Amino acid sequence: METVIISTAQFSHLQYYKAGQGPAVVLLHGFPEDGCLWNNVVPGLADSFTVLVPDIPGSGASKLDKPDVSIEDLSHCINAILDQEHIEEAVVAGHSMGGYIALAFAAHNANRLKGLSMIHSTATADTEEKKQTRLKSIELIRKGGKEAFVKGMIPNLFSADFRERHPTVVKHQIERGIMLSSESMISFYNAMINRPDRTNILKDAAFPVQWVIGKEDQVVPVDSSLQQSRLANVNFVSLYANCGHMSMLEAPERLTNDLREFLVFCYNR
Image 1: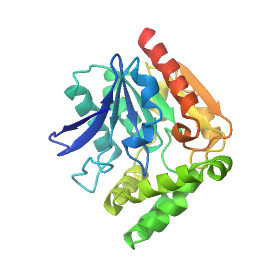
Image 2 (image 1 turned 90 degrees about the horizontal axis):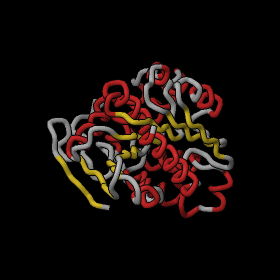
Image 3 (image 1 turned 180 degrees about the horizontal axis):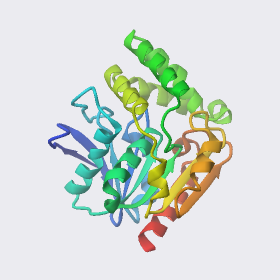
């Protein structure tokens, strides 16, 4: 993959990775990850598509220039990358927090969206219970407990079976998660707490929407995802057995194939 670094009025140092050629797909990672999360997926897409993988500002090598960032602010990085590449339209796929960012992009740039892929993500806002949980985590991180937070969080992103069979993968994700700064973690959690419900985007969507759902996802309730997957006019729904919140690591071959199928549909309708 080629590494590209750009600077804009909003982002002083935005890094993304580029591979392949053809119609474009943007892959947005979740929290607390960086663009490397997609390493098992990119090769299977790059033979037919231009794959663009940012480190979301505040993650990886991309800088977060202000602490009071919103999900909308983060979504502007998609426009910046598409403009840099002189690409008019793209399919945007977002994992977890990346899905929130993709939805914010859809809210303001639907004309640039060929399709939206929601990978273990949701269009609903945080419940009050979820907000309180995030606020407690913020307090823990502020008190110097970032490492304890990450070590407690990451294993629960995977199915129990995967955790048992692939402890080195889980350990690697913990190590990468700890690399994220405390400041970025707090900024991202506050942005997630304050994000609005965006189910109306799905109801009004003129673009196809894909849903990748893990049956053992402990972060995004399966029933909620299935309900949302009926809101758009055109929906692709994949329900993964024995999978939690991380199909790009738990079932990368299937996810790659499902993304390819969705991309082909979006660019040939």
